[in-house]
Image 1 (spheres, rainbow, N blue to C red):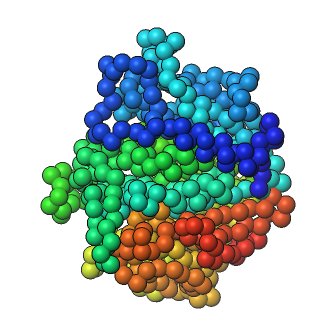
Image 2: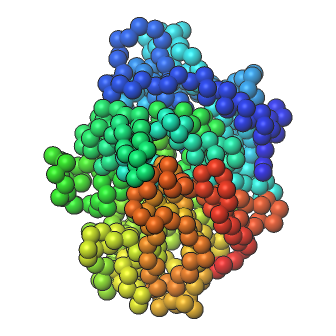
Image 3: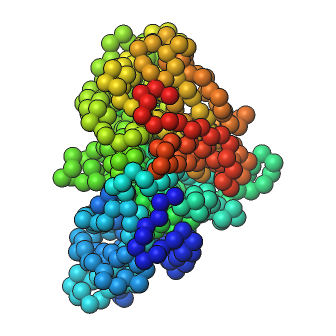
Length: 524
């Protein structure tokens, strides 16, 4: 693994320092009320810190205050913060739910960056709260440095929330201890449509207890309720400790709004007074942009989730949005479907950026799987595949166009990573097994959930010739995290050989499956 050279900061001191810094954070209040603007004392950042979309020279720092405050970030090469550099951030207040972002730029590549966030009284800058610290590694500019990252998704789903008896979201501690360069969250960061009850009785009679809040006692409809849903996860000390050490690349999927939603849909769900998913998704996207450090969601960057994050010469991460631009879920038998699941503009962007990429590996972060048949009711389908193993139809037409482009433009090193289905598996797609043959072989890896119900395996659609050398899934629906393992994926890229190794891991760190891929190939 690559380590920053500044100050002799090694892996062991990183793990110990991050744990100590996080332990000093007070547990945020469970109150659903907005922070008081007229409280006594100094501003506080009890919700921790995050860094997102890190590149060779930049990062985006996030914090939440308990009141109106000026955000100030200091960065340094060592934990002592000698020769610290200061970054003056925004005044944060109720218009962003007291969250704020500060962009760091001109950072040294391939180095460990220590940072701390101070919140100051806007009317008296001398009145500052206790600083909250974090650390991250910038991406290297050379190809000799090793790289590790994790991916997963699906957090607090199906009513399985923060359980103090289990130690909360302990999978985040498993990942933190492996010291990844970043974490890719593939969507379903919240379950806006899944309230969190205080207690759930398991099939064997045991009781699952949840930390609860007022906002998570019902489905999210108002902006305040969506904000509360995103804030809920930050009550977990494992997650806050993880965020203080591991930068994120975050995308979204359906449960940020409602199960299987699509633009223009009117919900048939008695729990909702607001039925229009366009209204609900706009509120959710605003809260999403307030609670995650994502550059392209800033108003001056187009307000997009889809983007490419350049992580040095070894890796580009192409983050897709398969939710905001899709057409309505249907039987998927159209012979012409220019909108598909990505929308025409996002597909053009993806083809263009893949062709421009000079990175050894091009990870396509897909919030939905490609060849797994994900149903939406009895006749419609939610993802790309629709169960017909013949020639591409419906949303499969977009995938066929993209795969054809990758082959004919000789784009090397593409790997697909996804989550969504609440189990872990590996799929290899090859033209000799497929109905559609104008593409080169590729791999798709599935991992998740982080803390949600486990579900049975889905069928494979033969259009693109998938084979499934590994799968681990429960045998019944909605098994709790106490009954079924939770999963995360790990990717290591060797700086010397350029080899990429994917490992599918379960909670506790056990490796279930691994695959080594070679660099410089159009197909694998």
